[in-house]
Image 1 (spheres, rainbow, N blue to C red):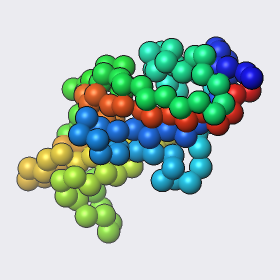
Image 2 (image 1 turned 90 degrees about the vertical axis):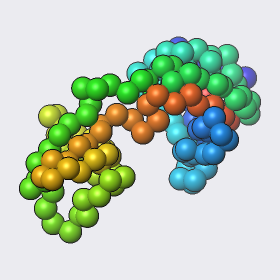
Image 3 (image 1 turned 180 degrees about the horizontal axis):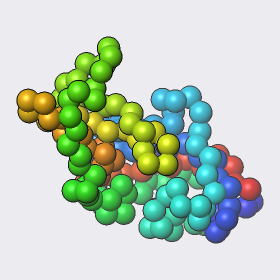
Image 4 (image 1 turned 90 degrees about the horizontal axis):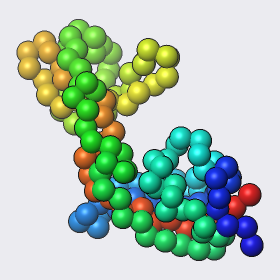
Length: 143
């Protein structure tokens, strides 16, 4: 039985739960598991350390503080934009999540947090930044 080590390719189901027990995200909802390589930077080091040694068929609940999960909110990720930039059918309202083109052409999701006159405040921090979460993982395969 192969256990997870550095550079392992891991296929797993995960559920992210908030402190109140509500589910923030789950691969079960998407209908397909996640696949990742340990050490490729897609997970925090601390989270990867918690997966090392697990084997296919094992499950584990991992409690992560905000700093080890999605980080703390970064004030540099809050931008003020001219309302004129929001054209078309998209309703501009607080709480709307929209995709913006980043400097590298990649799409970045931002959430509208405030609208004041012609100024729209957009927060590009991860929606779970600043939150303590529990990851429930179910390891499906390790290569």
